[in-house]
Image (cartoon, rainbow, N blue to C red):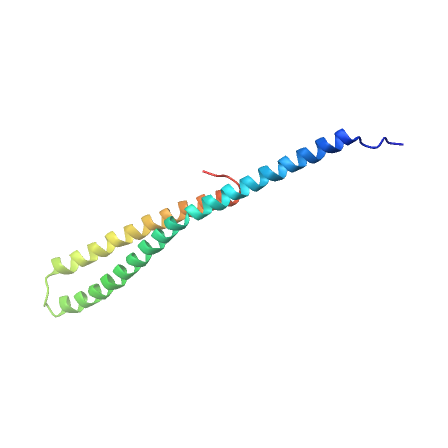
Length: 117
């Protein structure tokens, strides 16, 4: 037959259990604060993406117009090429934005895994 735990052992057990729960609660609170601090960064990334998307739509429209104008010899090839260069530069900005978003996603994933940076 196993001896029953003494009051001291029960007090120690519940004390350790209580401390563990408090530590867990503090970690969850830190995680919630960290995730909340990411919200402005997420909003900024979303805003930048929206702006780039609008710029791209405009540049594509202008590029199509320039192709028509170039065929009719109403603008120079240099003007049409400048627009295409602007579109290439914008595509590079899109690529950078995708990398920025990927890094942000990695930070959030780490935070959700309990890693607080």
